[in-house]
Amino acid sequence: MEILTTQLPSGGYKYPFTSVSVSPMTFLEINKYSENCPKDPLEKYLYDIKFLAQEDPKIYDCYVMDIDFLIFLKKLITVNEDQTTYTLTVKCPECGKEIKKKINLEKDIHFKQIDSKIMEGAQIRLGERAYETIIPTVREFLDVFNTYLRYRTVDDLKMIKIISLIKNFKVAGNQIEKDILGATHSDITLLMALYELYFDRLEGIEVTCPNCVKEGRRGVVTMSVDSLVVDFFRDLYNNCPIDQSKILFK
Image 1 (tube, rainbow, N blue to C red):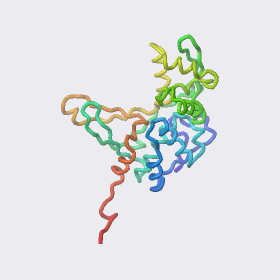
Image 2: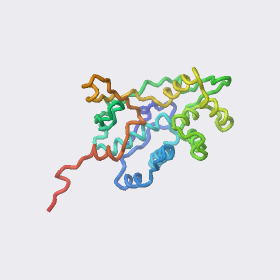
Image 3: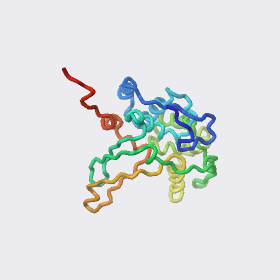
């Protein structure tokens, strides 16, 4: 399945290619995935990236902002034959009830309109230091990510993504890390804004808990791309049930 880069969160900004290949997993691939996929969140993220790149090496030249969506998309087209809808199951944060919601790739998945200005990077100030931001490709992100995968001085994926936005990590990595992790006051607001600009491009998908609504509570869960696939294998069974025509006992 060819996905046009214009359909990605980045809008394919300055991509030297027009599409990337993403196909449903086969039964063999699903079994390999379940057996080999690490439980550690950082190693799992790397595993998912490599899993995509096995099919299309151009993945390494995609922006990181596009990768979370492509990981989700591969799982979506694996669990649903029509390749457009997906039934997800989430827990209500207030009452703990499991809620099912069917989302449509064309109707419910919308990305905030990309502005070419933000794709050129920016000059920012953290504390007493000035920095320049970049919009990292997967290849550039992995230069940063592999350092933390090896030494584990930071093990929060969101923090690592923010650190990867700052230019010259190889030269000033320790200082960049210190300024980001130790940010206070308006610097925190700045870093959260950068994360939203460059990584959280999906407009929120709201799921409402019927129990909470009955009891007068709001009970709304807003989903992001990286939280859409909560349990891939459970979702596979929910989205692909078998009927009596599949098995006819003698």
